[in-house]
Length: 106
Image 1 (tube, rainbow, N blue to C red):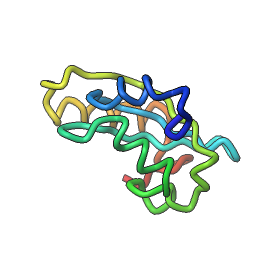
Image 2: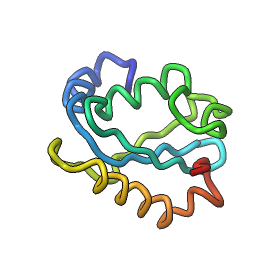
Image 3: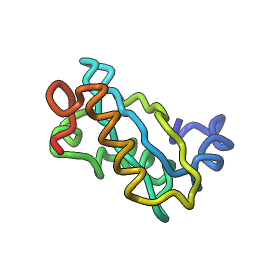
Image 4: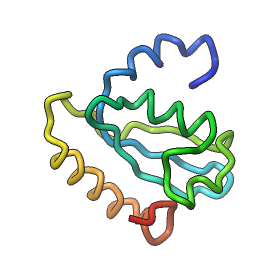
């Protein structure tokens, strides 16, 4: 999605979006929960992961970016406080157990 021309409108739409997302390693099903807030939107974060895997934890950097599947878990109004987005991110890490059985280390 981050490279194919047919998804150009999706990339444009994701640029200003802030929220919590899930990256699944399709080779083994492990999850990484992350967030994009402030000036850095979902598109910028996902593009970094898709290009070279950068931006994630040490564990995520060990995964081949071509195996990533991206999912939006929750979208926030851009004026939402960083604290509220952090709380939502932590909730999804707990709900998906991505710290113990996934790719999150924090």
